Length: 72
Image 1 (tube, rainbow, N blue to C red):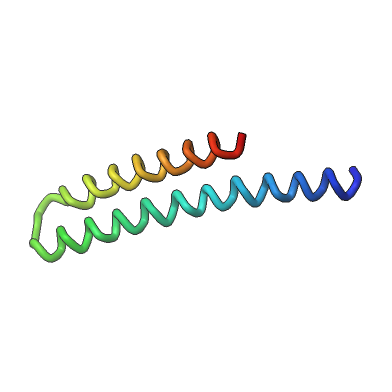
Image 2: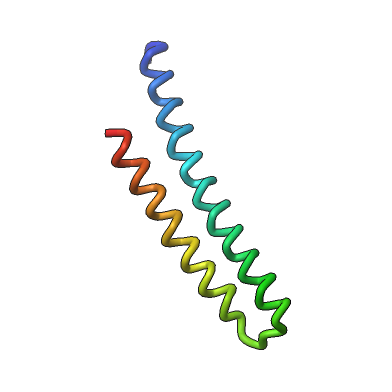
C-alpha cells in the first residue's frame, strides 16, 4: 500500500467512526432528556425516555443517510 491508499483508507475509517459517535451522542442526549422529564414528572413508566430515544434513533439515522448520500 502506498501513502495515497493509506490516506484514503484512514479518511474512510475516520468518516464512518465519526458517524457512529454522532449517532451515539444524538441518541444519548435524547434518552437523557427523556429520562430527566420522566424523573421530573415522577412517572412510573418511562414513556418520555422511550419516546425521545426512538426520536433520537430516527434523527440519527436520517443524519447518517444524508451524510452517506452527500459523499457520493
